[in-house]
Image (cartoon, rainbow, N blue to C red; front, top):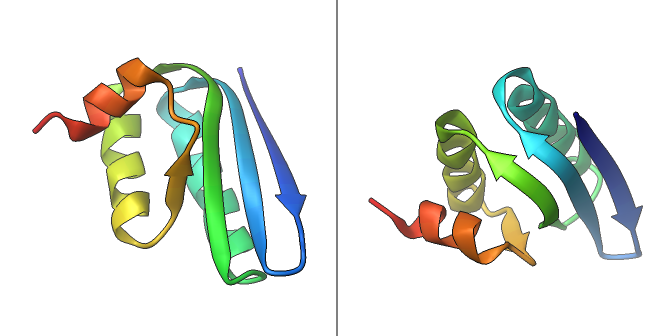
Length: 85
């Protein structure tokens, strides 16, 4: 299960992600990121509520970060997975 919650202010938006980031949920998160990026200058992706990521999710999170999405409040294990080459 995955929960996405957008928190907006004047200049930017934070998308809080909670639950497991796997399979079809990754595509859902990406679609929401794309939608929110059209309405704000900066998108922060708050990963503090993520309990599990699969390999595909790690790849997509790296791609989002490369595209300018700021990954914040990332749990240590996920941060390590994102840094691992």
